[in-house]
Figure 1 (cartoon, rainbow, N blue to C red):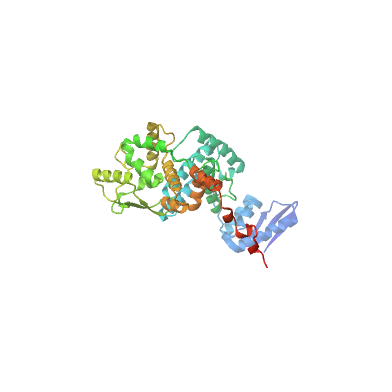
Figure 2 (cartoon, one colour; figure 1 turned 90 degrees about the vertical axis):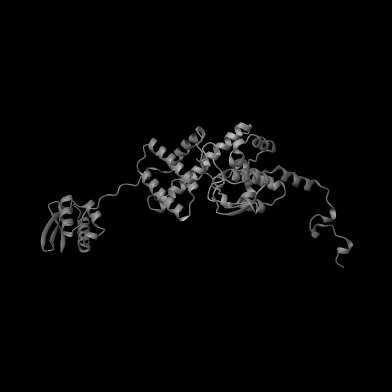
Length: 399
């Protein structure tokens, strides 16, 4: 049994432990504190080396007293775990992303965008001398947002986030991963709206004259032009398309889209059919070969290189900003103008009806003109509204 005994002004632990007599300083002059510490020492000794009380006793007892008690119980101090850093978080998140890609729960193209944002935030952390993850609070994130906007405006990197909303959304997900793995208590990143949603900006289809100019100047990019024009494929799907997905007999392209994993069946337009047929006859490809090849290297396109080639085609044709997604906008708007429903467009593009209605339909002038004509046409007064809105006649009155 151990007791707390006072000698002059200070209290000591006295008693026997495993037959060994001990007298150890407690470094306190308060009787209650001394008794509480002695009680905790007895409980720690009873539980042995695995007791959770040892770290607390280490902070309370003099070093010599603690070492003596720890040696009796066989307790060894565990090495301290360094505070998690941004570099550690980035490495763990990358490992998790690669695991999810293997399982089919994450797209490699999406990870490329995340990876760029990880690199950008790493530059910000380095510039500001941030070491521990705990140093990154909401005030620091607000500074990063100002820094990030300046980077977006000063340069344009293909595949990089083009808006603060997208950058913030990516960083929010990374820090949420840290919270889920108990590296942080709360997520310091506030979102800046939903990425891609801008009520002032919708689709950006080409004008008919711009399509004509692009076709005239396509040259070696004629196949890429026709494929984007008549399929509306995103860049990732266009560069990944193989000959096995092109059915010449049915004149259809059948593909599962990369972004949403939706199966689309597209009729092949005559212009695209002739371009595909000529390319097949020239190359005699295998079914697994990619359809689009870089005219300069003869190797399959990357998404980034296709983006650059289309911008270069736009410059030759005098059409600004001729990125691949504008071909998708053009096909969607053209289908709506010709009477296709949002459901038709969504099925063709592998999109959702909600996206089509929000992104394309409100920005089609022809649709607004159609509504205007309906509203301004002379109505037949007998057919306006419900029967309850019509003026009563003698035959309608209750007798």
